[in-house]
Image (cartoon, rainbow over all chains, first blue to last red; front, top):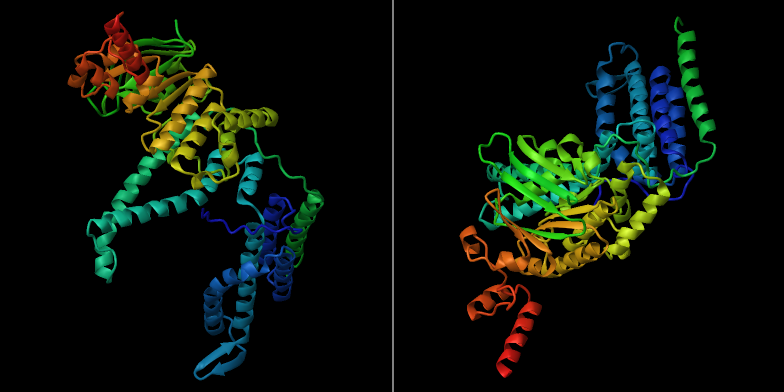
Length: 258
Length: 285
């Protein structure tokens, strides 16, 4: 059964960290790279995130995801290298293209921020079962309805895709052409999407009834089948993360004038 | 007064003119197994929804009369409250899976979590209902990986775990193969032994004749008959309502085999062979 989760089941220090601690790490590590716009600092943060990924034994999984963001990164480098408004110092030129130092160092900053962002989300997503994360959030006061949406969407989208496949087959068996040039495909789109939408509306209504009769809307205090895993040192790590965030803010305020 | 008591129930869906439920009144006793029959659009599903409180709380529309479940008036209470008395299982097993759980075990826990039960009670009840539906072997599987019959049994287990006094099943076997159908009927027989009141809408008349205590026969939103399977299926006007009697009854009718005491036609093979036996003895003497 295909679910759309990227979770990698390993046993590592990150897998044994509370989901909310990891979520906090994502927030803090992204925030401080914006609060302190220094290339060396951002580089250090990105490196820490990278080391954490390696400790989490999921480094290899992040590579293709980073690969996807390479297009964005290249476009940042080109645009900033050419057109950054403070461009003065010429660094090198390829034919008629001239790259400037100011632009490129700003591009490096942006690139590192993006990579850090992708990698720290990687830490959260690759090492956390998302049902555990959502359950932790519900316990912290997230609405169970939003929690349900977050959880079910990952299972229901593959199901809808399967329905789409069935409907495509059904329409094809009635002689509809679904393959060929763009025009043929466009013509095939409406007879396909109609039944898919109607079918999902119907299924959604039935599922709403099923949830209703199982007391989903009852305003009672909920309980949980799964006990939260016991994690150690979480308070300490969380305090350290908050300290880092506050320290970054203080640093920024102190060095405001200079 | 029985566990379910319906008085002059009338209902129509929003933006329609036709009464889907037209002046229904009946009582159901604790522990009875009621078969709900009638052709499509007779109002069977709507009646099921009305007993579970979905009508009028989930579907709006014009509502009249009274439905009392355990002396609780459905109209005055929310579905969440009614759901601890009445469990509802319907046709499509697939859309009854929540989609937010990754194992059958957790799937069954969903309703219990919403009820706010403590963990021990939950585990106890889940194990119990897994056992009752004979699905202990698949408790760690993903609900969407199961066959239709298994999925429907998970759906029933999820409802049973909430310990309702009444279980309503709306065509629970219409999407299942014969084997899945047998599984579901067997399970319901077990539940009946547990003392749960069962109301089941179903097109499989032959099965129904064998299992149900009483048949509630609907047509066009009206209650046509509410009595034993023998009486309902011996009616001469069944076909006027678009229904056919069980094969056994039709055979007995054309052969003129009747129960000597009450003049009803047999509805199950067992009854038929008893009557034939009697007739045979009669001739021998």
